[in-house]
Amino acid sequence: MNILVIGDIILDQYLRCGVSPRANPEHPAGRVYPIHEWASYLGGAGAVARLLQTMGTTPYLIGLLGLDLAGEAVQRLLRQEQINGSLIHPPFGVTTTKIRVVLDGELQRDRLDLEKVDHSPSGVDKVFEAVVEHFDAVVIQDYAKGACDPQSMQSVLRVAKDWGIPVYVDPPRGWSWACYRGASLIKCNWEEACEQLRMLGEQEESPAGNGCLVVRKLQQFLETPVVMTHGEQGMYLATPGGVTYQRAFGVTQPVDVTGCGDTVLAVMACLLTALVPADRCLKVAAACAAEQVKRLGVQPVLLPAGFRELVEGVRPEGSPEDVHEAGAAVRARSARD
Image (cartoon, rainbow, N blue to C red; front, side):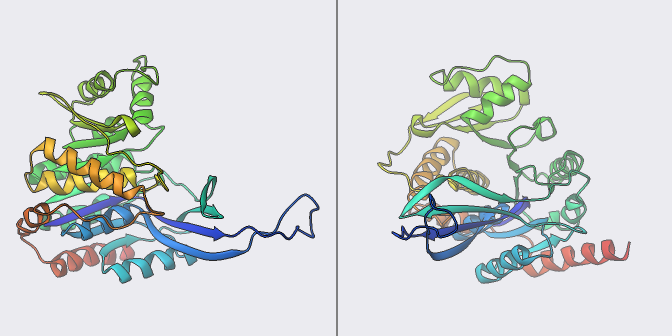
């Protein structure tokens, strides 16, 4: 199964620090925290591509990447994972980087971000149009960092519809999702769903409100199936036929929730494309998300026995080499223009 991943590529970094009894000589109230490890992982669309690969698919990544040290780190990780793609390098672009601190084994609440966002047309739709024929599905991971501008995304959905290819989307917080109306599936969490309803003029539910009602309203407004995660309260899938609920798999002490949404998106896209019934997809996604939050960073997740065979049974029409050559041709034309 070939799955094309479009979106914002992020470098996730974790600083693992110990606690030192030594005071900071530069500030009497401060302390010195020795760095034991500086770990880097693929984040955003890169994380989704990595997850899809471990599930038995062949992903192909399209996104923006800066010509900087963080971009070089991302490309090393992609080569290490043997993930191919067409990466666009905008002039003066900066690779989005998120730095999290683990102090004495505990992930801290604060985070350091490095980014430079440009919402002008990114050009990812042009690359997409050149390679679309080789894919069984499209996954869009939109963090509103510049790769997924509305104009390009509307073009992607229109072309994918013409080819009869399903599109699964994780849209950004704080932006209208109107450009994704008509997608095969939209994945969001409770807070994002309530925010979107407010933007659409609907009064959101209280934190203890009815998840079924929220996800059903959002599905009706967007005219698109919606899967919504709601932490310990479980997951909901709303389609025109009704709402399916899946309880959460309990995790006593979650370590890092960073990759939970990426995991749900990847599992749902992978299994729905393999024609697995939606209720079974939802259950597997919940189980995989529960495993993901037990570890730092977005880590590989294995599908339960029997499901990987279903995924691998979907035979792609084009080889990875065909896709890579088509994408390279578009990049060459863009460079000449």
